[in-house]
Image 1 (cartoon, rainbow, N blue to C red):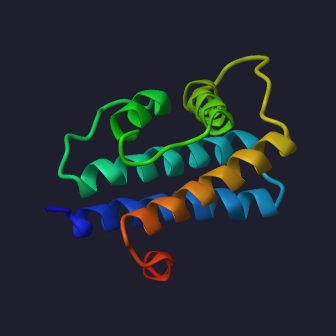
Image 2 (image 1 turned 60 degrees about the vertical axis):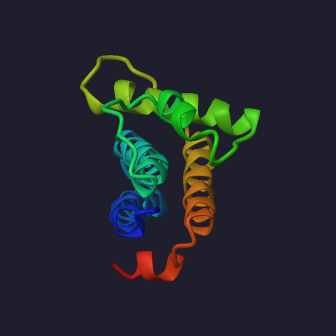
Length: 137
């Protein structure tokens, strides 16, 4: 039996990360922090599917690995899979100080931010969870 209550909790958290990333993007600030927020939004969105299924939540930040656990429920395209790979790198590359690292470009951030939003909406629809209810929390 689906666990919508748990899935909603995960999706609310995902929306908070997405909203923070979007606000920072609109203000043209801190590409590294925006990237991390996008990563957490996508990670938590995917893990909400596991939560809804009462499945074990993987202790990994590798989005490809998380996707492998939910691919029987949601399908993403090859282009989206490539975005998951890029977004996974955000967690490693942007979460910790590193000299001479390349920050994601504004175009890359816009693309991954758009993907995060579309994935969030797809998962809410798939799980039959009211998007507006989640966004109002």
